[in-house]
Image (cartoon, rainbow, N blue to C red; front, side, top):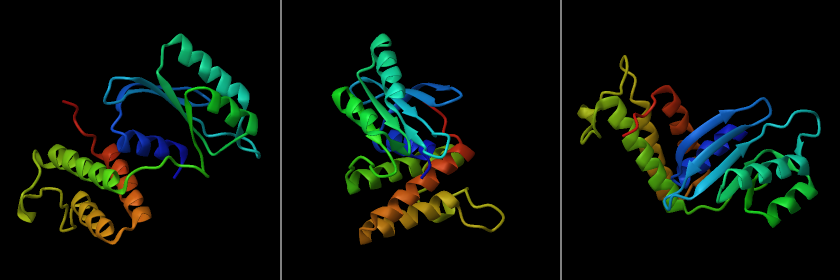
Length: 185
């Protein structure tokens, strides 16, 4: 998963609600709220250069923003971090997500997130969640509905305990969400 996909994955699995998204030249900041209305800053950085590390200066910049804008916590998502950046994050309320570390999540929570994502996309595409196969309007030109196929796949993967494949199912659903944006209530 790339950095942006990891951000979407975390947002979905933790059921964060988007408040604001700012795209800057070096990073993307997303302001979100959790279920208890805590304000969270998710910063995604695709590092440039051969080293590809996020350094302590970037972390300090994020801390300054979090304090000035009254964020309750933060998540910094990138490929790799320097040791000093990691130490600085551990002293503050900033969670690290990297190529080597992805936060723990419950398998059941992942499956429920997939199910909710499927339901939302079905409502957006068909007007409601189909009760039977013939109610599905997502099939195009004789090809099966992608959302329904991913739903079936994720059920099979969940039954067999194949978490990596379930993660990929969610990634694909989130990608389809960009193709078929879900209407907000």
